[in-house]
Structures are given as structure tokens and as C-alpha cells.
Image 1 (tube, rainbow, N blue to C red):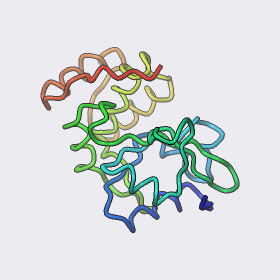
Image 2 (cartoon, rainbow, N blue to C red):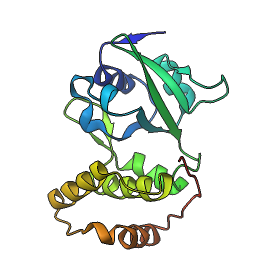
Image 3 (spheres, rainbow, N blue to C red):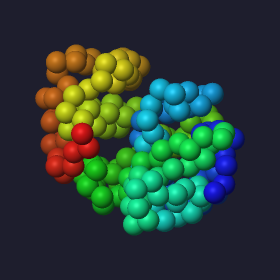
Image 4 (spheres, helix red, strand yellow):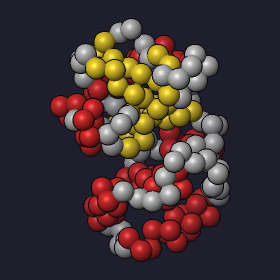
Length: 178
């Protein structure tokens, strides 16, 4: 198993491959490997899980056929990586494709959702995948909205998300990871 010096080094290494990837959330914590102590895993989306697994030298956490729940070795620690792939019903398939099409690159050189996609995918994650939004996600959404010029109130999240999904033709896939 290859050992990476940092999360950022690992993510930037993916630029050497033709696979579209992006970090879905919590990338704000990647400096100094803060993620390892504050969150359980790295959440990513890609269009080719085999390519990403090979590129990162990731190993399966649960069983060899599970290509979602992985481990990567970063700075001497096994770090969980949840790798979602287009078509896996984590989000609507068209939404997954759109997220990858509209991704943006960070100054460090890895890909993340654009601010609007981040707002709505984070809302969806909290409201559908987890059944409630953590306070840190609410705060992050409100900050991103303010920076993007959107006026959003926490109590409006469910209706805003529904309107956004309807406007884009996205549907709830029914996937829950509680």
C-alpha cells in the first residue's frame, strides 16, 4: 500500500489520471490533515472507481467486492475513504454527472464542487442521506450562500432543495446512510 504524505498530496496525484474525481465535502479541513481527527472519512465522487482505487493504492475496508468503503494510508494512518461513482444512486445519476462537469479546482490542485453545487449537495446529504443537517453543515451552507450572493434561511432548506432538484430534473434516489 502506498503511503501519502498528506491528503492534499493524495488528491492532487489523481490529476495524473483521466478519471474525473472530486471531493464531495469537508475539504475545508484538509490543511494539516485536520480531517483525520474531526471527521470519519474522505468523501469523493468519480466516474471510474477502479482507476481511483488503483491510483490511490486504496484497500477495501469491508470486503474485496466493496469499492465504496476504502482505506488509504496518509502520514502513517489508515484513513477511511468513501468513494461514490456515477450511477451508484448516492445522488441522482444526472446530478452526479453534473457535479463532475461543474467541479472546480482548488488552489492546491484538487477538485471540489462549485459553490452552488456544494450548497445543494450538502443540503441533500444532511436531509436525505443522514436525515438531519449537522450544525457545521448548516453554518457552512449559510456562509457559502452569503459568499455566493444567495439569501438563505435554515428553515427554507427543504423547500429550496426541492425546488432546485425539480428545476434540474433530479430525483431522490432513496439512498440512506444512517
